[in-house]
Amino acid sequence: FWASVPQGPPDPILGVSEAFAKDQSSNKINVGVGAYRDENGKPYVLESVSKAEDILHQKRSNKEYLPITGEADFVKLASELAYGKDCKALQDGRIAVSQSISGTGALRIATGFLSMFYSGPRVVYLPNPTWGNHIPVVEQTGMRVARYRYFDKKTVGLDFDGMKEDIKAAEQGSIILLHACAQNPTGIDPTQDQWKELCEITKAKKHLVLFDMAYQGFASGDIIRDAFAVRYFVEQGHQILLAQSFAKNLGLYGERIGTFSMVCTNKEEKDRIQSQVKRVIRPLYSSPPLHGAQLVATILGSPELYEQWLGEVKKMADRIIAMRERLYDLLVEFKTPGEWGHIKSQIGMFSFTGLTPEQVDALKDHAHVYMTRDGRISMAGLNEGNIQYFAESVSKAVKG
Ligand code: PMP
Image (cartoon, rainbow, N blue to C red; front, side):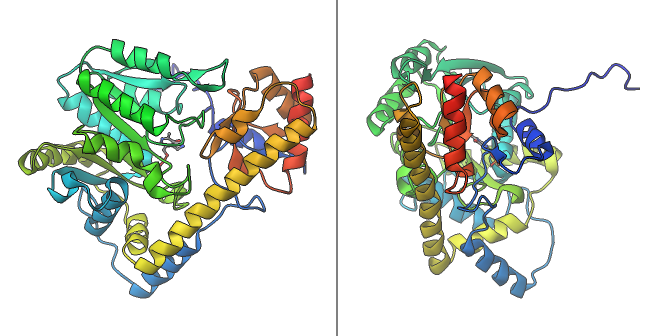
């Protein structure tokens, strides 16, 4: 049956972890995958999550199926976190929200829905560069991918003029995907003034905006600040689509928990939309998993656990910021050729270092340091125990 099926390429991100696992060196460092590590380089379970686990264990609730759109308390609390409790659209009951299989699943519901119902141009504009998985998630539903400029190699910063030009030049009513905060892989976000301009431009062109919010709280340590773009666009009347993930900010990676939502014009429209979102979800996985939804609802629904969680998100964000400062200082101390200020100014989990694919290969071959070939590093993979060796190795690779 399958003689003509070719070998698929390794996943560019998860392939790095596979190579890392095979490396026997005791010095090895993995800054490839975007998962938080504590100051000892270990995966980190938040204390608020452990407490919620205990509460759930005591409750001994049943394991019945959830509704297609997910656990009701979770969906309500999660959307309040994203949009803000005082969001008018939320209060009006005109946001269609469903639980999703984390951020990826939310994006897949979005593209599934758009491919079935969107009457505008069937093209999704992605930033260049973007998280690699955006491309197949769009293409697998038969939609087309187009790109807008985002990264300026010369300044290692945002190419805001290029971004605006491309979004303005896109056919009216195109679908524009925006990273809500902590852009992956660059770690470079528009400023609040730039967001306001983007809001105007996309509105004038009647574009449909799809926000991908995988890092709320992780960028600045402040969940309100990181939700600025999403909340501002909604306030200004954009009918956005939103993919929300709890993988990073609650450390719930493997629980696969998030939401997909669409802001509608009124409640009647919301009910129609939600009935069709259900038809997208049902053949994909029937109904979503229970445990992550219960965990998140327990935390967001308890004033005490919620406060504790806010402190923990901030702690994670602050540790990453401290590692940025430290890495910058060390690269300068080792007299590494080039300008490294972007390491400090970029935000979120990642830094787009500007290392070339050849330098990345040299780091792997000579120093057992693993990262994706675009030179992206997960700052969370660095800690006091390995940062000196990491900076020294990078410095050597750059000097050649
Ligand atoms: N969007 C972006 C930009 C991401 O970086 C990620 C995670 N790497 C996701 C979405 C989805 O992650 P998950 O499915 O684990 O929530």
